[in-house]
Length: 244
Image 1: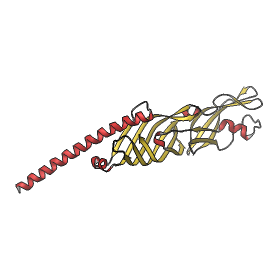
Image 2: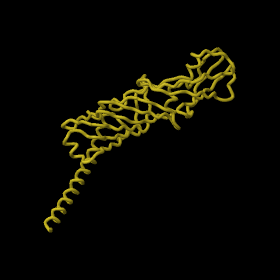
Image 3: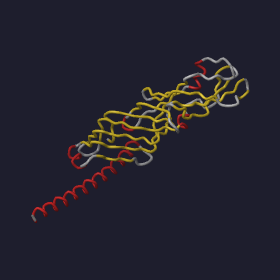
Image 4: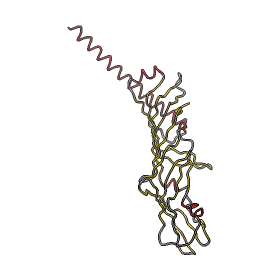
């Protein structure tokens, strides 16, 4: 009986030491992965990296991590013509992460995630300076906001025959994703002081699109929806590169 008690104590102690060693190892690996990702993606700040699943050491021995979650608070994505766009709170959940024997590279079998783009960032793409859309009529987009039910409210300010309209015209617009581009399109065309204006001229102001390219690891845009302070985007990808 005494020998069994001693054996149980030894097992508990060894188990505790293994858990402690496993947690120390995963904490070290998360820090190294975060530093490598910051360097690879040229990030301004160090991202959050969480390696889930237990035990970690047996996953390392097998060469594949079950679940790695990455969070980047401020990411600058390419937006075309040498410009960039700020993406806030980019989070991705990587599944089946395989890494090389020297830990120099890592690739996830699949990834899903979310991101947020503030309305002031999207506004940079819209026609936010007076543009003539018909003889004697100029218009510009002066604001974007949540229009409810997943739509964007586009505020358009217009001047007709030298007189500025007393208040901006609000246009409810749908927001969609096609390839690497977010598209904003008016559901119904606004009226500007009763002046007859062609649809294409009006949409040159109300409709616009924002390209978003070179997201981390090659993940791609999937869906987009208007929200309180900006648009919420879902992203996904396969064979997503984390490092190397």
